Every structure is written in C-alpha cells, then in structure tokens.
Image (cartoon, rainbow, N blue to C red; front, top):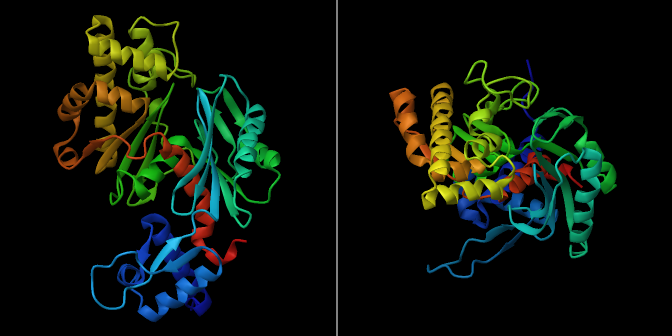
Length: 393
C-alpha cells in the first residue's frame, strides 16, 4: 500500500494553496482564506505566519471595516519585494517587464524588433532591458524566475523554439541564450505567446472563473491558447494550439509553415493587407490603417475586412464545435479584426456551430490587453514558487 502524504507535504501543499490564492485575488482577510481554502483559523494563522516569515506576504489590519468587533487581519502579497521578470518576443517588438507577486506590472521596457532577429541577437537586448530595471529594484528584493512568451512552437521540456514561421526561427534556444546573458541562477521558462496569454486571462482577466476557454492571438500569424477543464492544453510536446495552420482551403495560398491553405493565409496580416491592396505595408499599424479606412467607407478595405471576418468566424465555429468553450477571447491583431468585423464573425459562427456548443459561448476581448503576454510569462516564472513556497530561495 502507498503511504499517504506526510504532515510536511500537507503543510507545503497548504502553503502553496494559500499563497496562490493571495497571488491571484490580492489582499485577502484571514476569514476569507479560512472559508475559501476550507481550513480552520488556527491553521490559516500558522500558514500566514510561515509565509510572512519567508518574506512572501505581509499581514495588517484593514483600513476600514464598517463593522464592530475585532477585524480579521488582511494578508497581502509582497509585490515590491518578490518579483519575476517577463519577456514577450513578438514579430515587431521586444518587451520586458518586472512583475510583482500578485500580478502587478512594476516596471517595463519596449523596443522595436527588426524582423529576422535571431535568438542570439534578441537575448542581449532583453537582458539589457532587465539591467535597466534592476537599477530601481529594492535592495532586499527577490527574483524567483523569468518567463518568456514567444511566437512559435515551443518545446515544453527545455524551451527550444522548434519553429517560428513568422519570425524565421528554427530550433532557436532562446531560454538558454537569455539565461546566459542574465548570468543569474533563477530558472528561465519559455512558452508560446497565445498559451501564456490564455493563462493570464484565465487567472486574472476576462476568463477568470471560466474553465473552458480559447484565446486567439494574431500578429503576422495566428495561434491559440486553450484552457480545457481549467488546465492549459498544450499537447504532448508543448506544441498544441497551432490553429493558424489548420488547412481551410486545400491547395490554397502557400503558408510560411510550408503547407497551403492554412487558416492564417485567410486572416493573418499578409492576407488582409493583400486583400486591401496594401502589399507594401506591414505591421500592426498597417492593419489598423485598413480597419480605419474601412470605417471611413473605403470600399476595398471594407471588402477585405468582411472577407477576413467571414474566415475568422469560419475557424472559430470549428474550434467551438471541437472544444465546446465557454468563451473565445480575441487578442493581438485578432482583437482588432474581431472588433472591425464582429457581425461577420457572429453570422458565420451562428451558421456553422452546433447549437449545443453555441448556446453558451461568449466572444470577448482581453481584459489585460497587450499585458496578457507579459503577465502570462510572469505566471510561468511564479509557478515554481506557488507549487512549493518554502523551496525557493
């Protein structure tokens, strides 16, 4: 017979559960923690004392209670002291942020990314942004890790970017390159940008409370982060969610992945700009210009937006039939396309999706906006701490 968990294991699990709750929900009273975690008051008191002793949380009286009697102490994450670094490597820009325990973005940097930049070239730029931010970090601050969001297929075991068609990356070791540049002992975890954005929106954004979510992310290409049964669905090696490469037009236009007729050849940046007659333009600003032109009555831009919106709804309907989500979130350039062509998206969805799958699905834009990728990358870094708060130095 297998022995049950030891008292120390139970204690560590409870510490992780309490810290995770405060990390996600923010300042919480001991009374609320007692109710939410199903533990008695004395256990909650002992756990918060342990976490406070480790410098992970602080306790204090609430500013106002409005009730008579002794107020319940409030437990707060030590956001300024305990932090992670987050990076988002996108087609046209590099972003870095310092994110405190509790999800607050404490500092950030952003710079343009020349297309064609390799991992070896991107790593020192990102490390330089961190070194700038470190100049204002409190002396007693603790960095628990770093997380990277990148456009491409990321191998879960070691963070190798196996393929990034829109960035031109093939087998790029961005995690190892960045760790070497930082010269620190904290772990660097790499994830797909759509996957980590879905992680963030599920934890503290639009999808909080939803256990089945699809987060569509667009830049030049299209990917998805999928939450199924409250868990991230990333596939065997971590390559799940490449919905932009599901073939929707057999023998259609060539795709950067090497196939033909992929979904992103109908709704991605190149497809929309080509349909609008703007083949010399590129980037998010160029896409926004098409949407603005369509709104002003430009006939060709309107046709391009309607066509892309129709194809967006086509793909979403198929994803709704396959995964039966409660919510579909449109992020990156997919947000802009959805807002410009919501009528076409909804019409196509209504005509294709199975009624049983369609009746409860909600279409939304990200609450966290562009910060979803950074906050999600930070969540990757915080996972080790939240799993065992006493095992992280």
